[in-house]
Length: 265
Image (cartoon, rainbow, N blue to C red; front, side):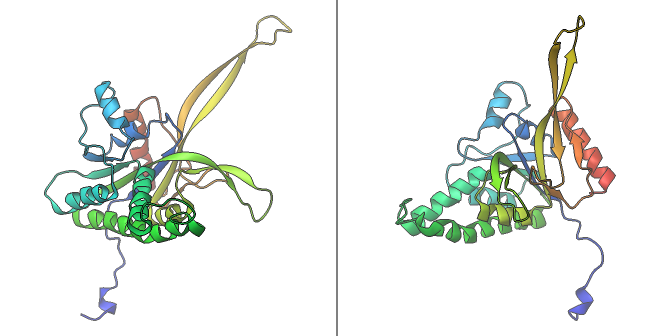
């Protein structure tokens, strides 16, 4: 077969690659637990899934024991790629936790565990070196996606970071809590970068004329799917700019699936 004969016009039909970053308390873990046949990889210190199951907030959900090393991260993904199972979605909770384990691995391997400006932190060399390891990680996720037809859902904490604006004054924005170099690789890899935040509606109830009134607020959760000055987001799936997350995880997932169907994503 000639090389040109391999050209195709239709999609390969592979599952999507999602990344959700959100403020603390948004419900990232509960939302991702609604995905089809999920299995969670929990990185060190990120055991919210265990807590939710123990508290009866979520049913028993398949998950690896808390992972504390980079080698364990890679071994878990390879096992899902190579061993028989029926899981349909890999959830990383959190991928910025995996990033930290990657840096620890590189620091120990290449800088004898020296985090100072004489080792890993010297001219930020450690972060440069770690890019190769991180690219290998996202390539491994794609191998899983291709060989096992698994959706990949990465959960990330958000942080407020100052954006250096070349066209005007600098400003603050919500962005995933990752180093710029690893975030750049991950951002390019993902099909969807979703941002979860809270919106508040303030109502003022007044009594007698001249009364200052009493303010009450209603807060609800919203998922944003497109980039704005105030946050990082993107999607290739035709999603609406905003998706209401409702009052619980089940409603949030139903709304998200409806938006996916509407966008034919």
